[in-house]
Amino acid sequence: MLGTKTDAPKTRGPDDSRGYRVFRVVNTVVLIGVVVVTLYPFLNIVARSLSEEAYIIAGKVTIVPRGFDLTAYKLLMSDALFWTNYRNTVVYTVVATLISIVLTTCYAYVLSKPQLKGRTFLIGVALFTMFFSGGLIPNYVLVTSLGMKNTIWAVVVPNAISVFNLLVMKAFFESLPSELEEAAAVDGLNTYGTLLRIVLPLSKAIIATMVLFYAVSFWNSWFTAFLYIDRQDLLPVTVYLRNLIAGATDAQQSGAAAADVVQAAATLQAVTIVLTTLPILAVYPFVQRYFVRGVMLGAVKG
Image 1 (tube, rainbow, N blue to C red):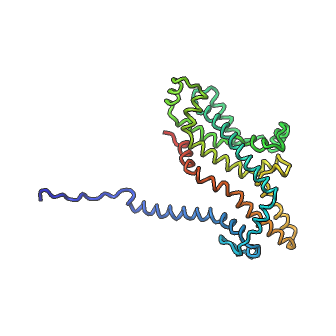
Image 2 (cartoon, rainbow, N blue to C red; image 1 turned 135 degrees about the vertical axis):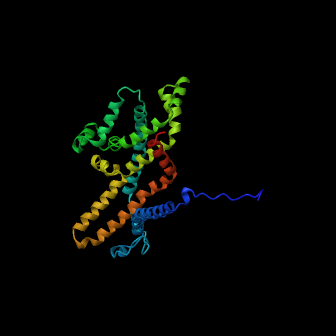
Image 3 (tube, rainbow, N blue to C red; image 1 turned 60 degrees about the vertical axis):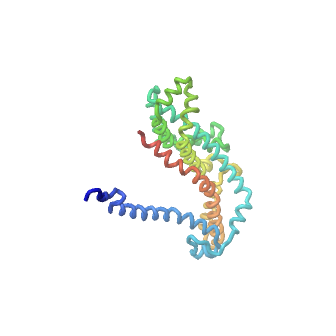
């Protein structure tokens, strides 16, 4: 019949296929499983930090506190050494992250220039240190001979550049259009001006990602400070936590008579872990949106 319209047959898109629906179900189940496996240990630690010792000894604490008790929190927060070490951790993390970002950015920007003479050698030096190190004793002798022992520099300088972060940032700089820097050179900007006024404003995502990587690494680090710092008032809070764990282990090895000491130390461990991880958990949501974008921009070119 003239003037009538016939409905065109509907085409099924890729989102409507049976295989894709199965994939979404499997993907959802797997991701939920990963979330559960990731969250359970932390929720268990939080529950233990808020539970009475009797329930913890009986093994009745899972992810819900039993016998709500804040005694361990009060005991730990009244310890002046804990807050001193906590302040040290904040200072070490801020200073070390700032130094690492500056050094990594400068090194990665240099390596991203194909016309740089000796570029292959510089990349080789970085990769060599990724797989080989001087060893524990030579590093200790070097740090001590430089006069950095029992100072902040013993913590922030030896691990100032991560080669993995360096290579990711290098790949990101290489993905930026070269025409931008050519236009900046025509306008009279030198290398430093181009980096500060052109490249860095376009690199907020990768810089935020590197800040997250470095900050988490330095915040959780304890062995470097344990190795190079002898004074209790200069140690980070992670070493404070390590000493608690060591104290609980020693008490446990001393016999059943020390069960109360073991449990008290274990409760304080849980409280310390909670208070130590809270700052990272608070900061992460604000930089998480830059995380995926920064890594992907540094990993995919074109």
